[in-house]
Length: 417
Ligand code: AMP
Image 1 (cartoon, rainbow, N blue to C red):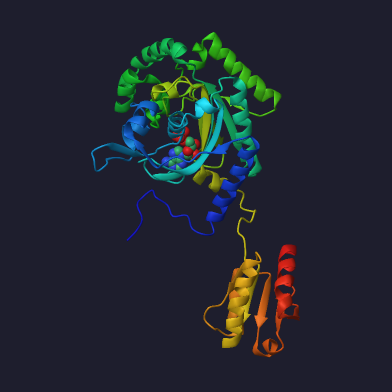
Image 2 (cartoon, rainbow, N blue to C red):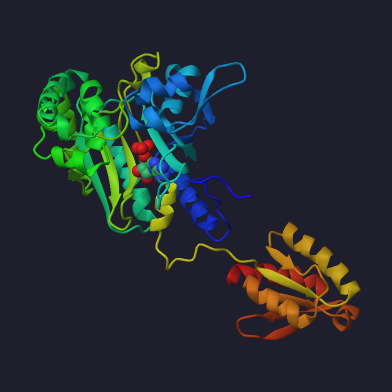
């Protein structure tokens, strides 16, 4: 039996990179005052349909949706923002403290065509600032994002930003883009011909080349911003400039979810090939109302962990190795070794040992595979004197030490290596 297409196992050897990325995320987000908020895997389908938008690819054809046993339609979360907002409103977090800064790390599910960097179960690191409409929130979130990615020593990253305006300025824009696209409608794919009538902005994120080609010279929403949206965008850019955070304005970036308003952004990596977006996000001031809540201005991002891990520099060693290997010779030594291993672990030392009573040579080979810097050799002769041999695997130097000394020595030596 094999696993499901597009669903990936993450094995030891790679998982250390994931642990590193996640712990760095927690550390950096903590410095900016973000708290972890965990959301469930499943939500009512309606929640995503209403927020992400019926005419988006995600809702239209990518969600894992099924009826629960009592007939409710449920969906495996395709993204986190909507659920975080639902939780924030459901638990009255907005009443207790209107400004909420939350992060979440976990798997998402989308029925996309699997390829390198694109999976059906993939993972996102999410961060959201809820309850702040000021451009400072946009700038702070972007600074945090780029600090995090930069701290992982990722190269060739490009932050692209845009403003999608609000419903007021999008109305006149919608008419213009519709007019423009209708004149080219015959050359658009079937999906886009439909999108053109229901949600013309979505044509921008069609992946088909024939549609992209038709968009040359299309009007962009940036040119239609109302004074308030324009001021907001100018202020965000001004703050980024003051903080010397490099970015490029990309007026054609619309993002694949309907709930975005005003600031939208993406981080694109030069080294990823076709699936080159590492992170996407934006402001979603209308989302809370879409899902039946009060008005809550908010902004957030989602980083794709698979793609992030692919970009980590290879030179860095993400693996950890045991501190010590216990090689025991003979039954009595094995018994002692087994007990000593537990004592060492209680003292905070990572210990590996042999379970099979193999020869010293074979045990030393095993220690070599584990790459432990130290080996404790328990032989019958030494045990008679309550002593053991401590071997430094790098220098091959050996010395005899009293058994009761072993823990102290290994503890200090392992700290030093
Ligand atoms: P989105 O939620 O669509 O804005 O995506 C945010 C980020 O999640 C993207 O920039 C990708 O890094 C990642 N992502 C989205 N879909 C997938 C997928 N199917 N497989 C792997 N990563 C993905």
